[in-house]
Amino acid sequence: DTGVSQDPRHKITKRGQNVTFRCDPISEHNRLYWYRQTLGQGPEFLTYFQNEAQLEKSRLLSDRFSAERPKGSFSTLEIQRTEQGDSAMYLCASSQRQGYQETQYFGPGTRLLVL
Amino acid sequence: GENVEQHPSTLSVQEGDSAVIKCTYSDSASNYFPWYKQELGKRPQLIIDIRSNVGEKKDQRIAVTLNKTAKHFSLHITETQPEDSAVYFCAVPGGSGNTGKLIFGQGTTLQVKP
Image 1: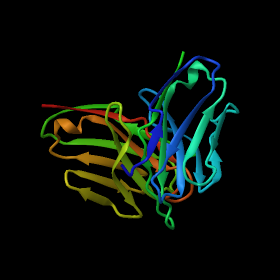
Image 2: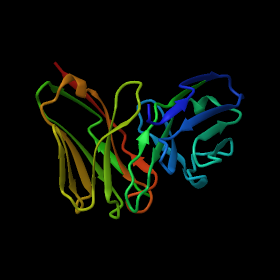
Image 3: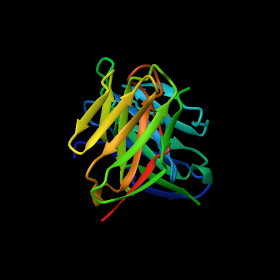
Image 4: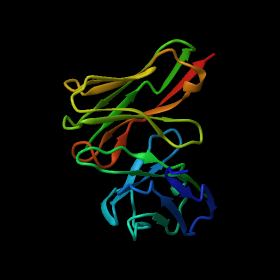
């Protein structure tokens, strides 16, 4: 499968614990995005990288959230001291920006449940 | 910032009928308009997109029309089939031009009755 992959697909944790998610983009894609999706809503932007540089972070991304893309390939999203409000689907997308054109392709998501 | 409104929130049609979903946006500089389909428990999948000043784009039973003056674009599905049942999201770039983060509409749940 040459699409975007995410791991784990599901995560159940207790409030206060830390969790880390991984995203592997399509291999030639230089941009990687993280979105959060709650039930009945569209995906909401969290942050994105171009190669290893984090170019933008949403105001939704509190200090408890951190994302990295150390070698410009896979990315990790860590949530510290999880809260019940963090329960959501975390989606990763990747794209190859060419000039002023770009199409984002999504991974299957990691569904997080905080008890 | 960019604001996207999508209507209707739910749509039920008989198999074989057409379905139309509309999105309006606020930033007149937006120049890229994708539509994603998301089946229950699955990833959003790009089904069609339109760029530049092209007013319409078709791909088999799916088409997107764009009215930049009025700042709205619509998804048209003809000859609907039960497998078209899903949630559909429109999106526009939240950054400049055609790139960067996407701002999504609230979604339309389409039900196609056999």
